[in-house]
Length: 358
Image 1 (cartoon, rainbow, N blue to C red):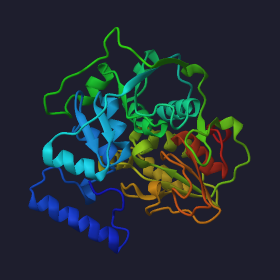
Image 2 (tube, one colour):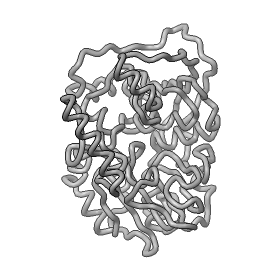
Image 3 (cartoon, rainbow, N blue to C red):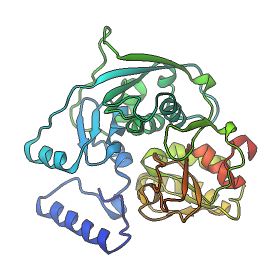
């Protein structure tokens, strides 16, 4: 999947994509995606039914852990390990210890899986689940959308986890139905499973989160973050470029304008999400508000293209990392948030709670 620097941003990325394209053609790779058929990998694979329950999935991208939302053991590996897996069909792993997060209560308005995972990372730190399996369960998880589950699983790597895993319930089975064509097996934790730690979270007290530079663990309730003027907003990525995110952003931007000094870039994660958002009229809302709409691409998330930051600039982004220089200049700043805070901040021109603009 050609998603990181595509549409090709420069000669080097064009040459790289050419090598991959020729490799796929030479070996008759069926599942090769680029151009209008491509999207951001970790949104496209679940959408196309290429991953499912019981799978073991490895990918040369750390956010391969996304597929734990579908009951798969999935994790990122290095290029050498991936080559070995392609050649031999096997890899060596140490079985990770498990930590469990049991979520209860009623979700507040606008709060999503992004807020849950930022809160957890803020609570345990960026190495708090190092080489462990983060398991999510509880009544509140059952009420969480599949888009939000994929978002939460996507960011377990930011807590140092080896993988994240969600129990397969009726909502997950409905999502998989008609997508996953291969035989698959649903696994569940044993009733007497041993956990390194079990943490209970009342989501009713969970507010909208913002992670301040320069770590995803610098999480705060958005209402604690005041007077932070911004230059750019990114709504997209493998973390928050799904339909739920675009819908939330559109509902807040409806009838409003992006602040004059702010660039608001919206990046649907896949062509299907792009078309659905277009058909639902979200694009009209974005364009009327003064947003820029990008084709599906990783783009600015990793400092690739489509929204690089200059020295001293600040961005609110629905992406997954805010390390020094992650989105451009080493003296720029990235504040991580969900789509609701991102859209509200674009309107106000500074980090804001949606209720301040709606």
